[in-house]
Amino acid sequence: MSDAEATAGSSSESTRPNPAACTIRVDDIDKTNLAGDGNYLWRHTLPDGLDVVFKVYYGNRSSLLYMKKTFGNVMLTGRSSHMPKPRCRVEVDCINTWEKHGFRCFGIYPQVKVEGLPEGGYMTFEYIPGLHFREYFADKSVPVEERMDTWRRFIGEWHRRHAAAVKDNDSRLIHENGDVKHVMLWKGEFLYLDFEMIYTGKNIRTLVGREICAYMRSVGRFFGDRLYERMTEELIEHYPDKALLMSTYDWAFNDPHPLWKLIRNIDYAAKPKNKKKHSKYEVALDIKRRLDERSLTRSNPK
Image (cartoon, rainbow, N blue to C red; front, side, top):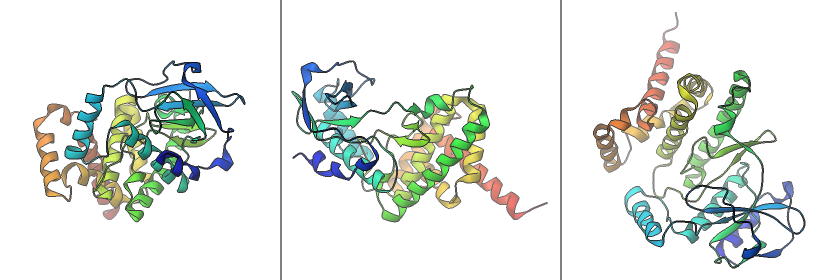
């Protein structure tokens, strides 16, 4: 049994279809890739009629690039390995951790094997035809107030996960690649995806700040100024822990580790792109400004 299989059993199997154990020949799979660069994602219908997705971590990148990215991750940015098998193990571990806390992810089916793929270098996932946040919030046919109701509901769940990460000191509950491309809506639930790497050995509160900045940067990038303004105001109003929300500024400019604080201050000062309106640094400054204004307004009512 592979490491991925050993940890996969904690997924919420009782709430999703559970296919019988079987082995599929790799030559029988339609290899139309559902993803972009990187991994291969292949949709396949099993003999019992259930659709699944095979995620192959040995994708279309060279071994040299995997090693280069791993060096950067481990030695420079404090993340886990970029090599295929470690990414598979980390993803399965994170999914089990998120689902243990009640956050819906794609189900894992380690009993569905693929003959011809490297053991431990792929995983079989549940197929769900959900709708990405990136599509949903940009859809002007959905009334804006309906979209904001969804956003407020997400903010509550977002905070609950962040609070759990801080309480447990667990970076697996922080989305290393979090943005509006990695959350989906399905039957009224939020569905989370893409957990191949985690940050290691870093302050959890500042990682929360980093993730919030990354999400809100993507809001501005994909949805434009008007929706960014509204969604940021909703975030300021409805995120319950304002001190934790202020960790966005701490991540960008006041990291508790002096070296990272220096690196980010140099990065912000040296690169013009980091001063654009929806860069992660400017988002951090914007959130701090709004929190400061909110605090002043409430402490000095007219």
